[in-house]
Amino acid sequence: MPTLVVPADPPRPGHVLPSLARDAPLTEAEAATLYEACLRDAVAAADAAGGDLIVTYPSAERVSPDDDGTGPEAAVRAAVAPAVADPTAVRFEVQVGSTPSARLGNVVGHLLREAGATSVGYLPPTAYDTPRTVVDGAAMKSRSAELVLGPAPGGRIHYAAFATPALDFADALAAPALDTLAARAADADATTEFVESRPRLDGPADLPTLLASLSARRRADRSVPEHVAGAVDDLGLSLERSDDGVELVRS
Image (cartoon, rainbow, N blue to C red; front, side, top):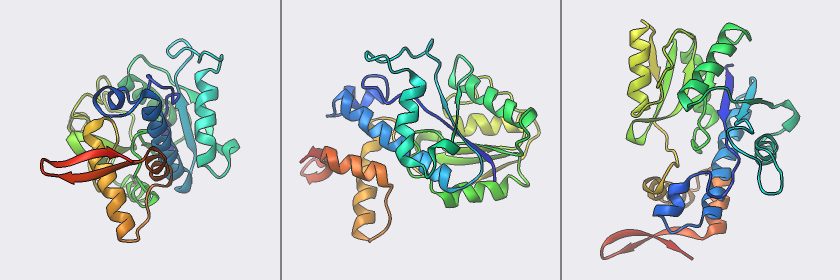
């Protein structure tokens, strides 16, 4: 199994998913609640897949402690703990790099070159619905492909697995990340494979997909992402049909 990396931020109001509070009918605290739920479902999927799980967190220089003095490491540890079978088995490491692309390149390079990993899976914290089957499928494809990409709407990725450190990671997550990473692999003569497309929750445009999916899967008696579904229920979010189409409502 690959070494799995989930980059996390403290689920602090105003710090995570700010556009949900700015452009959607949510408060900053509610946006932080949804981010924490997404992070937990992402970490739970990575934990269920087996292998080594590493959750990275920002340094105190990049993200200052909360008003009560809680630093980013402690905040991320507390957010992750309810989502994993054994919190002591999760490795927590500080993020190194000034941009998300640099931080990705640093952790992938370190794990492949120096830590003995054969492949590194990268699962963004807002990829709330990337199940174990997808992670397992990417691991199988990593045996013959040096890059495996999981598409998400808008040219984003919900997952990536790296079996080579040879890619140029400078701005490698620049939008559209799906095509940017594929281009970097082609430039390095590395082979690329794909797994199925899955959603993310990064802004207001992603909310209808999330809410419609939860409702549809419940009607069909199918499983739903546990933590995100619980947060949506607690916040009373749903979609309602109107003469103007479909709108987000609060119960």
